[in-house]
Image 1 (cartoon, rainbow, N blue to C red):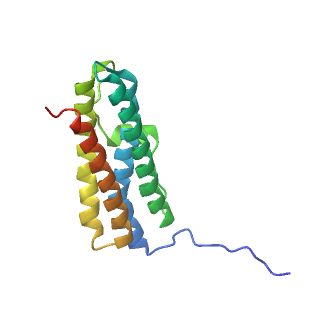
Image 2 (image 1 turned 180 degrees about the vertical axis):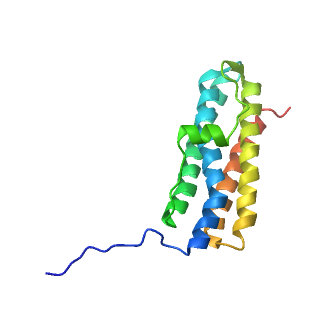
Length: 161
């Protein structure tokens, strides 16, 4: 009988590449997971004349942020390293401008855009840092940044006069 079980090493990539990728993509995972939580907070508590449009748009932003967090985290894990995205870790590693209670739709948009802007800094750092480390991981950061930029634009369009 032939043994068909295949054991793969815990680390599937060059350890230095994996560590560098985790260094640059972990803050992205944290910011995207925080955007999921804070986006839902804004979604539940938004008020005002533009309620329904913002309420629904925030659900879209949250869904995208969850997808982006998953994409970045899975890249790290695919290279053989774990990701810590527990709520306690997010609380230690991120901040938010989203208020705790009800807020007018303009204030909620400004708060979420502020959170997005913080994430975009980490995304640009990842794009720049991964250029010399791992182009596949850099592609992940570029893909996420492209989507986050679009969500930011959609939110800011509501503030345009």
